[in-house]
Amino acid sequence: MTEQGLISELDRLVSEGRNPNTMGIDLLPTADILRKINDEDRSVPSAVEKVIPEIAIAVDRIVCAFQKGARLIYMGAGTSGRLGVLDASECPPTFGVSPDMVIGLIAGGDEALVRATEGAEDDVQSGVRALKDIDLTADDVVVGVAVSGRTPYVIGGLTYAREIGATTVALSCNRTSIIAGMADIAISPVVGPEVLTGSTRLKSGTAQKLVLNMLTTASMIRIGKSYENLMVDVHPSNRKLFARAARIVMQATRCTAGQAREALDRTDNDVKLAILITLTGMGVDDARAALAEAGGFLRKAIGDRMM
Image 1 (spheres, helix red, strand yellow):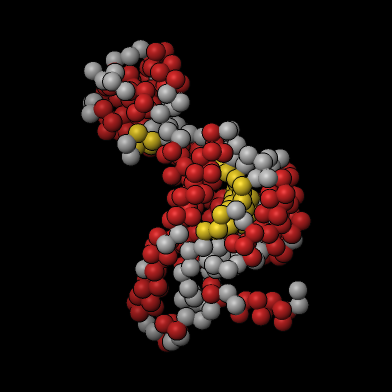
Image 2 (cartoon, helix red, strand yellow):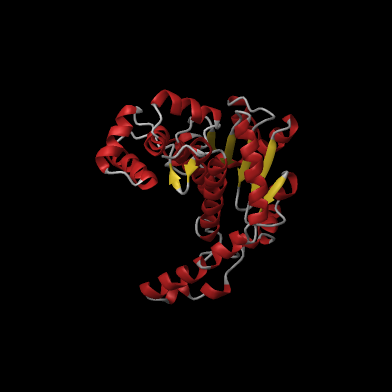
């Protein structure tokens, strides 16, 4: 595409428009600049609220993928790519899942996480290669993350994902974007022009972060990774997480800290098992079998066994 063609394309994007509320922001004192940013940020949650139906459809497809042993894959460039990698990297410590269950791909590879490699997003084939490199299957779900919805890297990835039959999701902040029109599910929280024109790491980035949080958190809850609102599949690996594990057992069972530590010691720091044996009085082996029979859902395993 020529430079003039790209300029014309950007002119059509809501996310690239000039915000009439911040035209004089360069003349304001610090506190007023911050109020302008804060005022604009208030619009983000309501924009996300409008696309909850689409997010719900995506979550249900992700849950189906997880139940088949398949994966959720984010792919994006720049800020969008970094947010996808961030959300994916938080899943193993939060939910005790394999690092291969939720994968974040960014144009330019790991180097792009800490140093801008903006030219990497222009290669359509690199998006295809990234998915081939992880052996994408038809059971996987691919979420293309791009504020503009026109990033070649993401377009290439979604095109390949569709070709092999994987579920495709487009997360952009422009309702009529290219990726919104090509994906099975389009999630388009429209937050409008940014405080600084085109700086989509601001409202658009915040909207993307909220949606990504929803996709993984809701999907993990749906496959049994929580009990009430507690993270019961957390795997403690440092002092803070060991303390958090004990506290979760205490909150779920109303036991003492000593009782929680004893239960965790008996179960090799398996929080779910520790809660189950504390609430029911079951032995560790019987509790493990009950959890397996319940598909990992702690509520179902507890059933009517509570002491």
